[in-house]
Length: 98
Image (cartoon, rainbow, N blue to C red; front, side):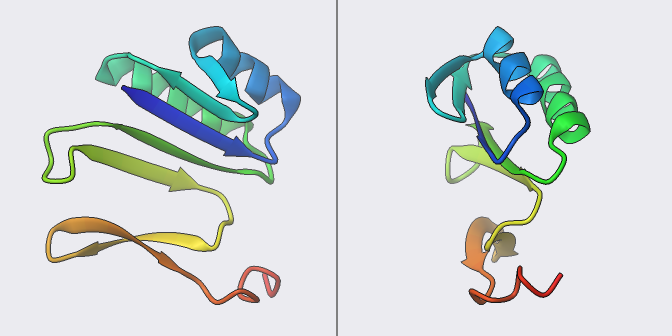
């Protein structure tokens, strides 16, 4: 299982994701692909995201059962804690200062 969530993404990128994945809600795309296609899709996100932000999560043989990557400005910050991937939050006004 693969999930990509796009926020504030250009229509061109959203259309590109809709070619490969099912858009089950605005900006939320799901599908089932192998590692190679997943990496290709993430390259497309990196190239076309502009000022938006994105997260991609997929099934993996980790303790949590999934892995994820993020891109762009967002209050959520992935971090590793004792070998587990968690999500922390920046202070509410931290993104406005950039």
